[in-house]
Length: 315
Image (cartoon, rainbow, N blue to C red):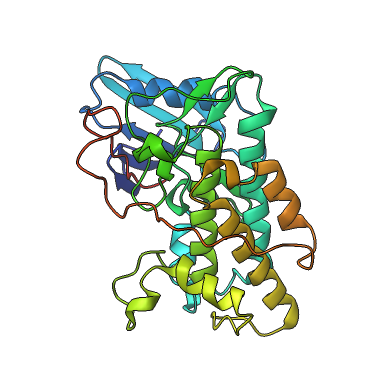
């Protein structure tokens, strides 16, 4: 299928992804999981969760291979790779295809995918690792949520999720995942990660950026919050029209609502979608979030066991 693993697409903590071709000439991405995943939990999670889904904004699992301790997952090939390669190079030639309207469309598509996972499946799915790495783009830049290795399935009537390990990637983890003092773990934890990602799409940089010139710009959400609160010029790359300014402000306000410290203050993903698709005028500026997701894990998880770091790249 991969012509002896000839073309490598990417590598991360999970293993390596190779380009493959099926007998019907369809292109696929073959994710070969690292053997260190001895218990196979990531593999089982991914097959169990993605295998239950069917949505335009969820990556399509074509099949899987299991032979002894060797495991591989086969997905549709996404020619434009991950969202990360476009949003962190805003202003360069590689991002020229992603104007503000396209970024807005991608944000809406991801929200629709999350709404499906949270409300549309017969078994609800929490992803727990929403980030630009894990959003793949097809030929038309339609976003596909991928990498369900940390996903958790739960019954429809459950609102609170019990967990024994912290899940996610530093910088995108909701506060309640590293301390229950902030609230219960729920679908709102995915909403937080989504909000952090939307703000990175707007800023074209990591939210925590130690490379900026001024210390007050290190944490982008706080810096951009002040701009919106005072109704100042956003100073973002590529805004050349009033419509693009409205799109940027809408995405910022939605992102700031999503990263509220208290989970109860965050909107459901259905409300997020409604705000993104609606007009800017009725959107209220949320309170300033007073704590950020840690840029790295604290020493211990909420249950005094070692936290689980899965900062793998997308396919």
